[in-house]
Image 1 (cartoon, rainbow, N blue to C red):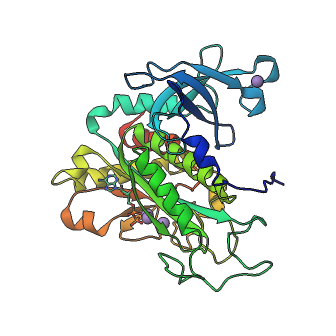
Image 2: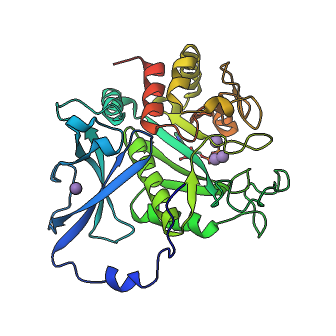
Image 3: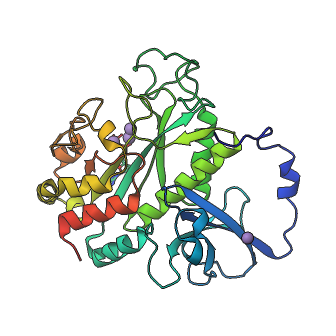
Length: 359
Ligand code: ADP
Ligand code: MN
Ligand code: MN
Ligand code: MN
Ligand code: MN
């Protein structure tokens, strides 16, 4: 059972948020925990004339034994700032500070997947890798079933809900829009949103983002979603199959291109990349999230988890080449295998190493 709160987001908070901060700012440090959820805590810093960047922000720490990230006898985990965003909750000049987790002995924490990913992106920088991730997720009601579902029963079969408009088809559009705005305010490269096939399920897209910024921006957008849903007293799940049976699961479709693929004649490089991915299928699946076997059944717009496949405009495959890319002879491809709960640092890293080799 989760904790309950009686009043969510009272409007009285506005008068406090407008108070002068006396030349101080609030910095919300955000990190990723052992379970793939974001955690955060805040601290006061002096207001500066220059912008805060990862280099001029203090390294901080937290109690890793309380998050499953360290043992009690050696519990300090360091937070090393790696990206800074305007804070959409408190407003500028307050900031959000995405941080990597490091152990006290100077090694990256076990759940710090960013460090190795950044090295791979750095080594391949001249390829100009672009990623675009489609984050599907489901709002939950107090009974932990999708939000708006009839108590003890099921809604009418899938069909009217995808990109649906109207009461009875979609829920919580205001939360989706609040999240969209918050991302734009923070400079997140959010490219759109849509209601999904399962009632209560939505998607937002982030990208194209270059290299390591893909993982950074997706993690911050996930933090925003959890934080905004909290204000409305609503739960969000990134589970890839929230409801068993004839209901779509949730993915994190990963669109990818390099400079060569985007240029005229790029289809040749796209085909080479797909060929290179095939023998790495099992290795990729290991990086593509938990419980994905419940989702990748070959039904409900997925390919089978057992077998690599690809096709043009085919949504029942591992990899889809968009119709427009095939027609133009250049562009990008979509890896449809990653689950909604996958870590974007792990996805983008294994795509790069599978296609271009380990560094
Ligand atoms: P779908 O048709 O699969 O639902 P979406 O429109 O939801 O596709 O998402 C497409 C994603 O692909 C977006 O995140 C977009 O930023 C990204 N994208 C577009 N062009 C490229 C490109 N050249 N390289 C990588 N990603 C791209
Ligand atoms: Mn304390
Ligand atoms: Mn999409
Ligand atoms: Mn989708
Ligand atoms: Mn897609």
